[in-house]
Length: 512
Ligand code: KIV
Ligand code: ZN
Image (cartoon, rainbow, N blue to C red; front, side, top):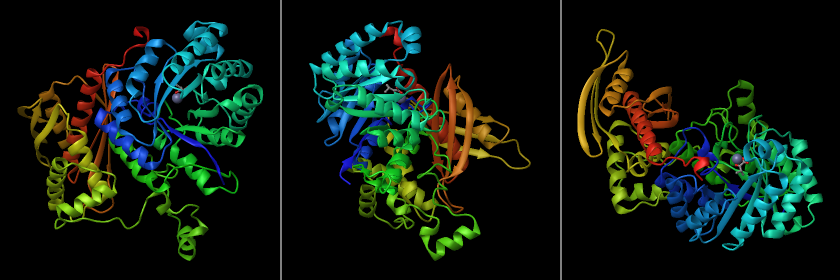
């Protein structure tokens, strides 16, 4: 099996377009480092023209990664391409990814351009990008609803102009697997210079067919797949990396094409992305969902005991989900913690280790055993969220069957301590009302959910909130052995993310 498909990960670009999934630069960097460890070939770090924050995050990642290609997205304007190049020019392996829509509906209504104008613009953009780098990807947005002959025409022109990868996106998740495979075959058969470029696909999951379409396209000849961790992305999301990689890994007899992915890093990467974005993985999600390897029915359990292959097509260890996790406790020392964090992919400075060690000891006083998920929370909350404006210093709640629930809260806001007390319908409502009053937020709580981070009654509660302030959506996540504290942490994290969004506005398309 020597044929390979290039894995182009767009978790930090299309994935970040999931409502509420915005990340700060440190969080993006952490994910980028993990994606390199996972073995993705190309990492799309962002859309530098979209915001100042994106530009900074992309250039930080470009300066850090050594083996992975770093791509930056740009529309076909010179201004966008300059921004993209400015952010990735220091990368070991930079790639400019430029795109323009090619479907009649997009060209007529959105771009108000003719086919000839679109081809001209695409060619000019690719030629201009070619003056900066020889690694250029061109995407025909809404390709699956475009005239196939027009696609061939524009692909031929951009390859002639210097594009080295041409991408066929199913932008609106409209394609059906056989139809999409036929489109890829058609493009490959009718674009005369196609052998000079890699054919890529980029699928969205609006009909739940993103993985199926991606696999069908690979069978038809595509050799780059654009994917995201946990399938996060615009609307219903993108093709999930773990699903398509594990499909190839599990069925090599049917599709003899491999990837460079280190599958044992799939589960840690999925956890990290979920932890940082606040987007929970549904329990029945293929490969990485909490139930993906859980066998409930007696008849299945019986079969599993006799031979795991009766009901298990993949081993949990293959995706890095080991049954026996190294467990640390209150007697574990700094050295054991450092080496375990390193195994998890966190190479911390001495100063960072001090912060994590202190929090680890605090947690170990409340909870007998500390497992990987607990450590991930500590690092996420203690290190990656250091630039927070609002920090929780203290929370005290009174509640019960005979008292009016009351919370007293002390926060630090931009380094300044503030405190207050308030009531609510329950202890969480009381805590939220008090925090909202101290911060003076106008945001509205759209969703609140609680789950347990691990098994056992001493497990940390994990809370996710979704907030809306004047159309800006932010997710917040918090974990703590006490679910009221976890809720307060999640709320404050969501409010911090709203502040980040306000401070890093996405530049409107008209302004570019
Ligand atoms: O879905 C899409 O068409 C995209 C392009 C920018 C590749 O995300
Ligand atoms: Zn997309």
